[in-house]
Image 1: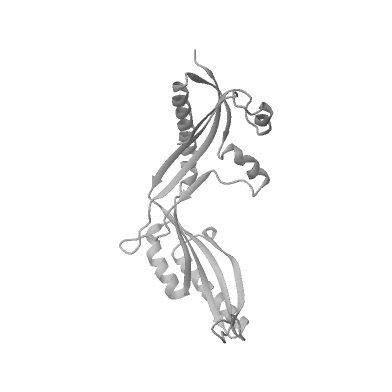
Image 2: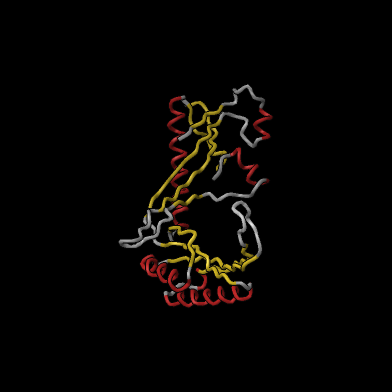
Length: 243
């Protein structure tokens, strides 16, 4: 854990702190962390349905027919429509490679593809569904991500634990300096120097990071790795000498 103890005795002028949104009196800045690991109980798969033909209309007709078979297959496995995203469509010409270093020659056909994202909430269904998608729909997989159905509840639990971790760190550090916490000044899910960038830059980030293996699950061919949910919180406490 990183612990930073700041006092207004720094050689920087107080206006610098004020401009950065930091207090103009002694404070401690700590980062609290919490983490929990659970076995995945859901999985999201991403794959492409691709068709190729000399004519773009024929390629499109074929890819739509394959997609229809996949939709029927998902319904047979009781995958809700809300857990299926199929909004993407892409078509592009295919070229004959005439020379070893020439990327494009004459057009020899067209490729049409649809990308589907499917959320599977019953991991027991996953192995058979994958096999059927490949066999019946010629699915070309690009990603398999494990996940948790109760992620929101875990986020709330970890937020509280991260706050407690920050408070414990601050008290432990201040004890060695004969200081104490007076009050809470600010709390942020991101580091305070990044707040301005988050607001005026690329936008707000998620406060929780979820990681997991992209390895499918099922005995014995597929196994989902546990999913780790991590929470970080940045806290500034105003402090004063302990009596």
